[in-house]
Structure formats: C-alpha cells, structure tokens
Length: 377
Image 1 (cartoon, rainbow, N blue to C red):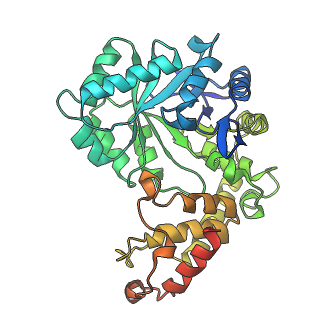
Image 2: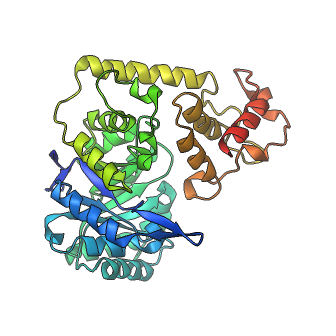
Image 3: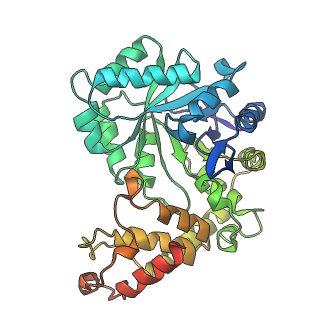
C-alpha cells in the first residue's frame, strides 16, 4: 500500500480509503439487510491489506454503518484513522454536541480522527456553522479536549465554493472531502487550491461506488493496453492527480476491495505519454458530450424546475461512456438527495422556451424525451 502525508495534519494515510456507505447487504421480504459479519470481515481484511483510513456517517446503511465499523475496528482502532460526520441540521451548538456524542457511542470510541461538517454549502458554513456558540465554536472545544483530532468538511455545493469556505475557515479546517472522478472534474481547481493551502484532500466516488467499474470499453480505451478493467482506469485517473491524497471508495464486496487495493498498490506511475493520452481522450469525450449539450446554461431557468444541463450530463454517461446503470441510478436520485433538488426530464411540458434560448439550437424537447425514456428505465 502507498502512503502519503495528509496535508499538514501530521499523519500518513493510505492512498485508498474504505468508504462504509455501501457495506454488503441482501434483500429479505422486500427489505435491505446489511450483513454485519461480511462487513466486519471486509473491514478487517482492508486493515490487513494496508488501508488505514475508514470513513462513515450517521445516516449510512440505514444508520447502521457507524455501529458496524466500530465493531470491525476492534483490536486496531489506534492503528487507523477514523472519519465520520455531523449533519448540520441547525445552528445549535447543543444539538451539534448531541450528534457528536451519539456517533462516539455508536462507534464505541473515545475520539474521532477526522470529524466533518457533513455535505455543507457555503451558505450553511456562513449562516449555520460560523455563528456564536454554533457548530464551529463547539468543534473547537472538542478538539481542545482531544475528542476531535482534526476538523474537516465534506462538500456538495457549487464548484468554486470550496475555496471560499477554506478562506472563511481562517486556518481551522484541515481536510476536505469532495466529489471527483473521470466523469466529474468540476472541483479540480478547488482541489488544487485546497492542496496549496495545506489541507488533506479526500475524493469520494472515484469509482462511483463501484458503478464506474462496470465493464465499459469506452472507459478502458482511455488507457489502452495499460489497464485490465474500467475500475482501474477510474482509480488510476484519480491517483494521477498530484493534489489528491486519498481515493475514498465505497466497497460492497470482498472482490471489489481486493481489486481496489491491488490498483492502489501499483506504484508504477503513468508515463507522460499515457497522461497526455488520458487527457486527450477525456477532452474528446467532453467534445462528444458537448454535441448533446455544452452546459452553457442559457436554457435555464426552466419553468418546471428541470435542471436541463445536469439531466443531459447524466444522459452523456450513457451515450458517451456506455455506463448506463450508473446514469440510471444517478437519474433516480433526482429530487431525492440534497444535491439533486430539481425535476427530472419527465416534467417537461414542451413549452419550448429553452430551445429559443439555446445558442446551439438543440432540439431540447426531443432530447429530454429521449433522456427520460432511457434513464427512467
């Protein structure tokens, strides 16, 4: 396993992190049952293979993830770095404390190495976290007591706002967790800024929870002859970025764990020629996607609250990268998760206002119909 200095935190972390969001599960009587025995076996195997960064959150796996991870870490808790999160539901410092104490109890630990303000926006950071006797004041007190070792945040807001959160954090924030993979590079500049400021950088979804690992010749062609799977392309892409310390992968099977660890153990860097080819191929895929929609947003806003550019981005996962399942699962999240609070393409009433504003004169109404038919399944 490769290890790197985690920003200015003073610790060394494994390049691969274990994300405990998609632990092994099975269906019974129409319900999802999380397999504690298999999950613990995976956690222990990951540790033996050199993974030393484990990430969870209160809501993962029907609120069971923290409990399962706590059990899985028995015997080597002091040899790993534990990350969890506090959902900032309000500006109350007392409520923040209660949520922290609940996580400590569920994890059965006396301290948390990296404690995140969970999925925050710039607005939440300013108006909910950084208020008198609010979450920021409380986490500083917990850090003074050693219960929280490092203050972190995870991010689902607009590109560019990571940098502003760091600026307003005035040196308090030590690590950041954000989305980044070969299909979504929107946070790339923010990641470079965070690295420059000395933060530890963790990226979520490097393999899309395994979905980007689905067989796709379009993805494997990004590094022809060098890789054995789509998952390898996805992880190698992330590891090639010098500003990223940890690729945090949500893994749901022992096979997925073994493959990801094998990729992370590969110390052979990509050659300059391979990096150039990867960049060129990525840009060509972006060009192909642009034939469908450039993302200029001139069509917005939509009277029916359809985020047209985002919907077409999901369609391009199917059209350009041939990862239809990944596209369909993300499409199904529309309206159900905080970062996709808009309507899907099925809400279109065919008013045509978007087409009038589109500089490419795209047949948006027809494309929305095609998108919904393909991705709604």
